[in-house]
Length: 115
Length: 115
Image 1 (cartoon, one colour):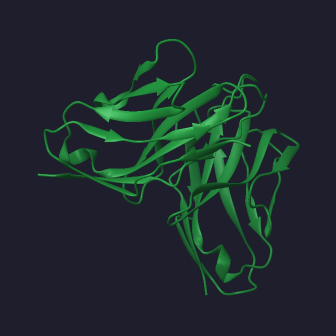
Image 2 (cartoon, rainbow over the protein chains, first blue to last red):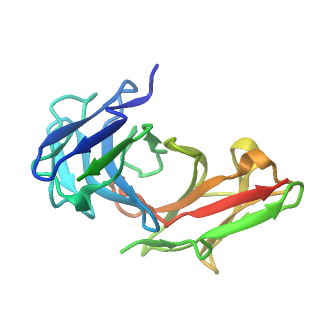
Image 3 (spheres, rainbow over the protein chains, first blue to last red):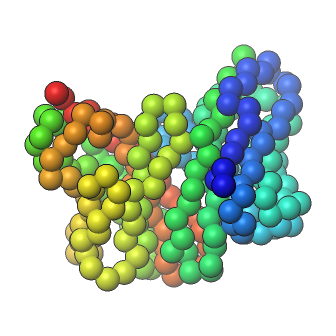
């Protein structure tokens, strides 16, 4: 049982390049989400999904796309990277029993630098 | 809208002394409150949560937190600090009246235990 895994751990991009951050969980969790962590700002929600085929925007969705074709995977796509997207990205998942009491479990993070 | 405030960016405590990391929240409905810890270059780890019931919640690594509805606070405490407790601590809140999993984080408090 690996929990929540993220790849890559580190990535450097040039402005305008595209890439996909991978996230997978093996706990059969319905709810998955992406956060970015910036100094002094805590964690901010980018996108989330309450189940396969369903996604929605969080607090800071601009510049990012997501899809959820399976329960296990929730990739985050940067279509045209900008220096403002330099950050540490965390994926999280929870069981989502509909009562909002579940604990979210976090992956180890991806540190992204956009030059 | 829900929000969390962690009024102290940095807390320093001598080893063996009690520690407190402060958190206040704002939600329109019932608050579900969480504490997470982040060690350097790692993802967030769940410490404890308050959903309902006893106002004093016990969690991992000897930490506990006290829910105070009148003061809208959920301070994290430990009776005797260890050097290994040095880390970044995040408080988070979810509105229990809504059937979604959106979690709002505070900006974090860096706890340093001085040997």
